[in-house]
Picture (cartoon, rainbow, N blue to C red):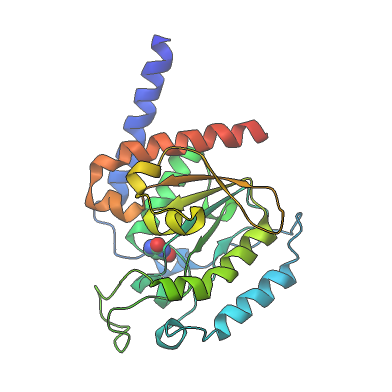
Length: 249
Ligand code: URA
Protein backbone atom coordinates (compact mmCIF):
# COMPACT_ATOMS: atom_id res chain seq x y z
CA UNK A 1 0.00 0.00 0.00
CA UNK A 2 2.77 2.39 0.99
CA UNK A 3 4.63 1.48 -2.24
CA UNK A 4 1.49 2.22 -4.26
CA UNK A 5 1.09 5.62 -2.62
CA UNK A 6 4.75 6.43 -3.17
CA UNK A 7 4.40 5.37 -6.83
CA UNK A 8 1.33 7.57 -7.32
CA UNK A 9 3.10 10.54 -5.72
CA UNK A 10 6.09 9.99 -8.05
CA UNK A 11 3.78 9.79 -11.09
CA UNK A 12 2.00 12.99 -10.07
CA UNK A 13 5.31 14.82 -9.53
CA UNK A 14 6.60 13.62 -12.93
CA UNK A 15 3.36 14.75 -14.59
CA UNK A 16 3.51 18.22 -13.01
CA UNK A 17 7.16 18.57 -13.99
CA UNK A 18 6.42 17.47 -17.56
CA UNK A 19 3.65 20.06 -17.83
CA UNK A 20 5.84 22.78 -16.35
CA UNK A 21 8.76 21.89 -18.65
CA UNK A 22 6.43 22.05 -21.65
CA UNK A 23 5.58 25.63 -20.91
CA UNK A 24 8.97 26.96 -19.89
CA UNK A 25 10.30 28.86 -22.86
CA UNK A 26 7.76 27.24 -25.14
CA UNK A 27 7.06 29.12 -28.33
CA UNK A 28 3.47 30.18 -28.76
CA UNK A 29 2.95 27.46 -31.33
CA UNK A 30 4.38 24.08 -32.16
CA UNK A 31 7.05 24.19 -34.85
CA UNK A 32 5.61 23.87 -38.34
CA UNK A 33 7.23 20.48 -38.87
CA UNK A 34 5.27 19.07 -35.94
CA UNK A 35 2.04 20.70 -36.95
CA UNK A 36 1.27 18.38 -39.86
CA UNK A 37 -1.71 16.14 -39.15
CA UNK A 38 -0.77 12.59 -38.14
CA UNK A 39 -1.13 10.08 -40.96
CA UNK A 40 -4.40 8.20 -40.66
CA UNK A 41 -4.22 4.43 -40.32
CA UNK A 42 -6.64 2.25 -42.27
CA UNK A 43 -10.08 2.36 -40.66
CA UNK A 44 -11.43 -0.66 -38.83
CA UNK A 45 -14.70 0.77 -37.57
CA UNK A 46 -17.82 1.92 -39.34
CA UNK A 47 -16.23 5.14 -40.53
CA UNK A 48 -15.25 4.90 -44.13
CA UNK A 49 -12.53 7.52 -44.71
CA UNK A 50 -14.49 8.74 -47.70
CA UNK A 51 -17.39 9.64 -45.40
CA UNK A 52 -15.13 11.56 -43.07
CA UNK A 53 -13.37 13.25 -45.97
CA UNK A 54 -16.64 14.33 -47.51
CA UNK A 55 -17.74 15.69 -44.11
CA UNK A 56 -14.46 17.62 -43.88
CA UNK A 57 -15.15 19.02 -47.34
CA UNK A 58 -18.62 20.15 -46.22
CA UNK A 59 -17.05 21.89 -43.23
CA UNK A 60 -14.51 23.62 -45.47
CA UNK A 61 -17.35 24.94 -47.63
CA UNK A 62 -19.69 25.71 -44.72
CA UNK A 63 -21.19 29.19 -44.46
CA UNK A 64 -24.02 28.30 -42.07
CA UNK A 65 -22.88 31.04 -39.71
CA UNK A 66 -20.65 34.10 -39.88
CA UNK A 67 -17.62 32.19 -38.57
CA UNK A 68 -17.35 30.42 -41.92
CA UNK A 69 -16.83 33.78 -43.58
CA UNK A 70 -14.27 35.33 -41.23
CA UNK A 71 -12.09 32.30 -40.47
CA UNK A 72 -8.83 31.65 -42.29
CA UNK A 73 -9.09 27.84 -42.13
CA UNK A 74 -11.80 25.46 -41.03
CA UNK A 75 -10.46 23.27 -38.22
CA UNK A 76 -12.16 19.94 -38.76
CA UNK A 77 -10.34 17.57 -36.41
CA UNK A 78 -7.23 15.44 -36.21
CA UNK A 79 -6.31 11.89 -35.29
CA UNK A 80 -7.42 8.39 -36.08
CA UNK A 81 -10.84 7.07 -37.05
CA UNK A 82 -10.04 4.12 -34.80
CA UNK A 83 -9.72 6.27 -31.67
CA UNK A 84 -11.22 4.85 -28.52
CA UNK A 85 -11.06 8.31 -27.02
CA UNK A 86 -12.15 11.62 -28.49
CA UNK A 87 -11.17 14.95 -26.91
CA UNK A 88 -13.61 17.79 -27.54
CA UNK A 89 -12.62 21.43 -27.07
CA UNK A 90 -14.53 24.65 -27.50
CA UNK A 91 -13.36 26.12 -30.78
CA UNK A 92 -10.21 27.07 -32.68
CA UNK A 93 -8.09 30.02 -31.57
CA UNK A 94 -5.61 32.15 -33.48
CA UNK A 95 -3.01 29.44 -33.96
CA UNK A 96 -5.53 26.78 -34.93
CA UNK A 97 -7.16 29.16 -37.43
CA UNK A 98 -3.75 29.70 -39.04
CA UNK A 99 -2.74 26.03 -39.13
CA UNK A 100 -6.12 24.34 -39.68
CA UNK A 101 -5.53 21.87 -36.85
CA UNK A 102 -7.08 21.79 -33.35
CA UNK A 103 -5.03 22.46 -30.23
CA UNK A 104 -1.72 23.53 -31.74
CA UNK A 105 -1.10 26.58 -29.54
CA UNK A 106 0.02 26.62 -25.90
CA UNK A 107 -3.13 24.80 -24.74
CA UNK A 108 -2.40 22.15 -27.33
CA UNK A 109 1.16 21.64 -26.09
CA UNK A 110 -0.25 21.07 -22.65
CA UNK A 111 -2.92 18.71 -23.94
CA UNK A 112 -0.27 16.67 -25.77
CA UNK A 113 1.74 16.41 -22.57
CA UNK A 114 -1.28 15.38 -20.49
CA UNK A 115 -2.18 12.68 -23.02
CA UNK A 116 1.39 11.47 -23.14
CA UNK A 117 2.25 11.45 -19.43
CA UNK A 118 -1.03 10.17 -17.99
CA UNK A 119 -2.57 8.13 -20.80
CA UNK A 120 0.59 7.13 -22.67
CA UNK A 121 -1.08 8.29 -25.89
CA UNK A 122 0.02 10.54 -28.71
CA UNK A 123 -2.11 12.79 -30.90
CA UNK A 124 -2.16 10.12 -33.62
CA UNK A 125 -3.70 7.58 -31.18
CA UNK A 126 -6.75 9.69 -30.34
CA UNK A 127 -9.14 12.04 -32.11
CA UNK A 128 -9.34 15.75 -31.28
CA UNK A 129 -12.19 18.00 -32.37
CA UNK A 130 -14.03 21.11 -31.28
CA UNK A 131 -17.64 22.15 -30.73
CA UNK A 132 -17.28 24.79 -33.47
CA UNK A 133 -14.96 24.31 -36.43
CA UNK A 134 -14.12 27.95 -37.13
CA UNK A 135 -12.40 30.61 -35.03
CA UNK A 136 -14.85 32.78 -33.07
CA UNK A 137 -13.34 36.26 -33.15
CA UNK A 138 -14.25 39.43 -31.27
CA UNK A 139 -13.26 41.39 -34.35
CA UNK A 140 -13.85 39.16 -37.37
CA UNK A 141 -12.33 41.79 -39.65
CA UNK A 142 -8.91 41.18 -38.10
CA UNK A 143 -7.96 37.49 -38.04
CA UNK A 144 -4.29 38.48 -37.70
CA UNK A 145 -4.69 40.10 -34.29
CA UNK A 146 -3.88 38.23 -31.09
CA UNK A 147 -6.26 38.21 -28.13
CA UNK A 148 -9.17 38.27 -30.56
CA UNK A 149 -10.79 35.04 -29.29
CA UNK A 150 -14.29 34.80 -27.85
CA UNK A 151 -16.55 31.89 -26.92
CA UNK A 152 -18.93 30.67 -29.63
CA UNK A 153 -22.53 31.92 -29.44
CA UNK A 154 -25.48 29.52 -29.02
CA UNK A 155 -26.43 30.05 -32.69
CA UNK A 156 -22.89 29.22 -33.88
CA UNK A 157 -22.87 26.13 -31.67
CA UNK A 158 -26.24 24.98 -33.00
CA UNK A 159 -25.14 25.50 -36.61
CA UNK A 160 -21.95 23.49 -36.13
CA UNK A 161 -23.27 20.73 -33.87
CA UNK A 162 -24.27 18.30 -36.66
CA UNK A 163 -20.62 18.10 -37.79
CA UNK A 164 -19.39 16.94 -34.39
CA UNK A 165 -22.32 14.54 -34.05
CA UNK A 166 -21.39 13.05 -37.42
CA UNK A 167 -17.70 12.75 -36.43
CA UNK A 168 -18.65 10.95 -33.22
CA UNK A 169 -21.05 8.73 -35.15
CA UNK A 170 -18.28 7.73 -37.58
CA UNK A 171 -15.68 7.08 -34.90
CA UNK A 172 -17.94 5.60 -32.22
CA UNK A 173 -15.31 6.03 -29.48
CA UNK A 174 -15.47 4.20 -26.16
CA UNK A 175 -15.23 7.52 -24.34
CA UNK A 176 -15.20 11.27 -24.80
CA UNK A 177 -13.24 13.81 -22.77
CA UNK A 178 -14.72 17.30 -22.81
CA UNK A 179 -12.22 20.08 -22.21
CA UNK A 180 -13.82 22.86 -20.21
CA UNK A 181 -17.27 24.25 -19.66
CA UNK A 182 -18.46 24.88 -23.20
CA UNK A 183 -18.15 21.35 -24.64
CA UNK A 184 -19.34 19.84 -21.35
CA UNK A 185 -22.47 21.99 -21.30
CA UNK A 186 -23.17 21.37 -24.97
CA UNK A 187 -22.69 17.60 -25.03
CA UNK A 188 -24.40 16.93 -21.69
CA UNK A 189 -27.12 19.58 -22.11
CA UNK A 190 -26.37 20.97 -18.68
CA UNK A 191 -25.96 24.42 -17.19
CA UNK A 192 -23.61 23.21 -14.46
CA UNK A 193 -20.09 24.62 -14.48
CA UNK A 194 -17.00 22.54 -15.09
CA UNK A 195 -15.83 22.53 -11.46
CA UNK A 196 -19.05 20.69 -10.52
CA UNK A 197 -19.00 18.32 -13.48
CA UNK A 198 -15.32 17.34 -13.73
CA UNK A 199 -13.99 14.05 -12.49
CA UNK A 200 -17.33 12.24 -12.70
CA UNK A 201 -18.33 9.95 -15.53
CA UNK A 202 -21.45 11.01 -17.40
CA UNK A 203 -23.30 9.55 -20.38
CA UNK A 204 -23.38 11.25 -23.75
CA UNK A 205 -26.42 10.21 -25.79
CA UNK A 206 -25.59 10.20 -29.49
CA UNK A 207 -29.30 9.98 -30.43
CA UNK A 208 -30.82 7.70 -33.07
CA UNK A 209 -31.13 4.98 -30.44
CA UNK A 210 -27.34 4.47 -30.36
CA UNK A 211 -25.72 3.34 -27.10
CA UNK A 212 -24.63 6.14 -24.77
CA UNK A 213 -20.90 6.93 -24.75
CA UNK A 214 -19.05 7.48 -21.48
CA UNK A 215 -17.99 11.09 -21.10
CA UNK A 216 -15.44 12.54 -18.68
CA UNK A 217 -15.49 16.32 -18.24
CA UNK A 218 -12.20 17.91 -17.26
CA UNK A 219 -10.66 21.38 -17.26
CA UNK A 220 -9.62 23.05 -20.50
CA UNK A 221 -5.79 23.17 -20.75
CA UNK A 222 -6.06 26.98 -20.97
CA UNK A 223 -7.52 26.93 -17.44
CA UNK A 224 -4.39 25.10 -16.26
CA UNK A 225 -2.27 27.83 -17.81
CA UNK A 226 -4.19 30.42 -15.83
CA UNK A 227 -4.40 28.39 -12.62
CA UNK A 228 -1.66 25.76 -12.18
CA UNK A 229 -3.47 24.40 -9.10
CA UNK A 230 -5.92 22.71 -11.47
CA UNK A 231 -3.22 20.40 -12.83
CA UNK A 232 -3.75 17.92 -10.05
CA UNK A 233 -7.54 17.67 -10.63
CA UNK A 234 -6.89 17.13 -14.32
CA UNK A 235 -4.41 14.38 -13.47
CA UNK A 236 -7.02 12.68 -11.33
CA UNK A 237 -9.63 12.94 -14.10
CA UNK A 238 -7.20 11.48 -16.63
CA UNK A 239 -6.28 8.63 -14.27
CA UNK A 240 -9.97 7.67 -14.27
CA UNK A 241 -9.94 7.71 -18.06
CA UNK A 242 -6.81 5.58 -18.11
CA UNK A 243 -8.40 3.05 -15.76
CA UNK A 244 -11.44 2.89 -18.03
CA UNK A 245 -9.32 2.43 -21.17
CA UNK A 246 -7.50 -0.36 -19.31
CA UNK A 247 -10.78 -2.25 -18.92
CA UNK A 248 -11.15 -2.33 -22.72
CA UNK A 249 -7.88 -4.15 -23.34
N1 URA B 1 -8.97 25.79 -27.52
C1 URA B 1 -9.96 24.98 -27.97
O1 URA B 1 -10.97 24.82 -27.30
N2 URA B 1 -9.77 24.36 -29.12
C2 URA B 1 -8.68 24.48 -29.85
O2 URA B 1 -8.58 23.85 -30.90
C3 URA B 1 -7.67 25.33 -29.37
C4 URA B 1 -7.83 25.98 -28.20
